[in-house]
Amino acid sequence: MPLARRPLPAFAALVLASFAGLSAALAPVGPAKDYEAVSLLGAKLVSPAPDPAAVERYKVAGADFERDPSEENTVWLGRRAAYVGRYREAIAVFSRGLERFPSSYRLLRHRGHRYITLREFARAAADFERAAALVRSRPLEIEADGVPNAAGIPTSNTQFNVFYHLGLARFLTGDWAGAEAAYRECLAWSRNDDSVAATTDWLTLTLRRAGKANEAAQALASIKPRMKILENGAYFNRLRMYKGELSPEGLLGPKPGESEAELKAAFGIYAYGLAQRDLWAGNKAAARARLEEIVRSTAWAAFAHIAAEVDLARLRLESPDLSSPEATLGTWTVFWNLYDLDATEALFAEGEGPSYFSSEKTGLIAGREALAAHHRGFGFVPGGAAKDSRLWLENVRFREFGAVALATADWLFDRDAASDALPQRGPVTVVLVRDGEGGRWRIAHAHFANDPPAK
Image (cartoon, rainbow, N blue to C red; front, side):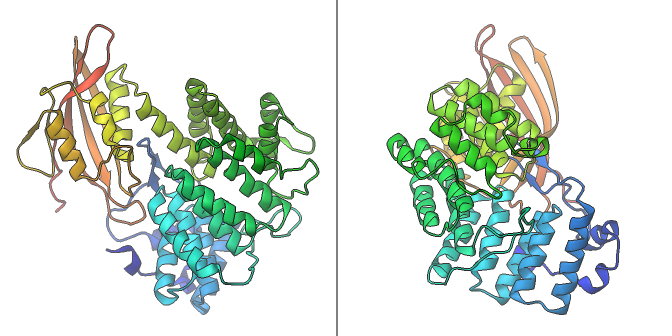
């Protein structure tokens, strides 16, 4: 069923139920996804149990929407759904709202945010670009916080959030020029120190990744020691580290006025800043170790986690680990999720040796050139492309026979993480060969099939 036509529930009755009952009532008829999204590394992402207070606010938003399905109440219903970890539902709420309010830059702004959460970066950028065209001519519009800061003072506005998240969506796809343009426009809407710090931080990262170290230094000049920061202390401290006012070691340690809980919550932001610093210095091994720690230990919906996941995926293709059959299949999963045609040479056996039976095409595909052409047909391009689909493996088993290994698994392919449609799936057998004692393991043959249709 297309996402935009997914019906919204009748919340008047649902708000009287417990959250467990609410979840059951909102679940689609028949089999349902047991995850919210799939990472670029091939891991299913499941939302943790929600905070009871957030659940109550979600129920109230549902009752408000049922009473008055206005643009404002639609925005809050979607936001509250996301705050309890129901990101696909939030996107459905925003999408139905856009049917009623097609020029709503607010709905586009919030839907784009949740597309980022689900790793659908191209769709996110498209929403923010539409929102930007609509909001530029509007007067400054303060945006209420879903989780207010300690002072209870909103620090952002709608225009700021549109350009800030547009910059992030472009950053995550490696569009450094586009991200820079968005963040520079965002600075024009940054009307307090919190907003200036957050925007300057990502602008600095963008400029450094684009090789513009001098311009990054110029951007940092706007950051002063006595800025009044209410909620973006982690970004402010990261900027101070870039300026040399705080040591890399001090960034991860306790700071004046920062509680242990705040330090723990900011860990991903700090560690990502240190990983970027390692990348600027060309120390990819250190960067990779930090990125792996972020992905392993932080909440998957956080921007630092998402950015770390993207960078780690790119590093895994740039310097592929083919040291074992398991490592090679892990790299192959990332290859599919980044759609990077350049990795075919590293992953598959040399010459005319590799072969492939596709679940989508009749006949044997033999040789590297034929394999490359086959993947181009799926949208693979040199350098990779941002796609909404995700591939991963489950129930993987390995058997080694000297320099040959046999892997069997279930492959799954989700064409759209934001939809309720179940992933395509089937069995796969992969034969890997080692190119010398202790050498790299490469794919010599893969055979995919589809599971029979459910009766």
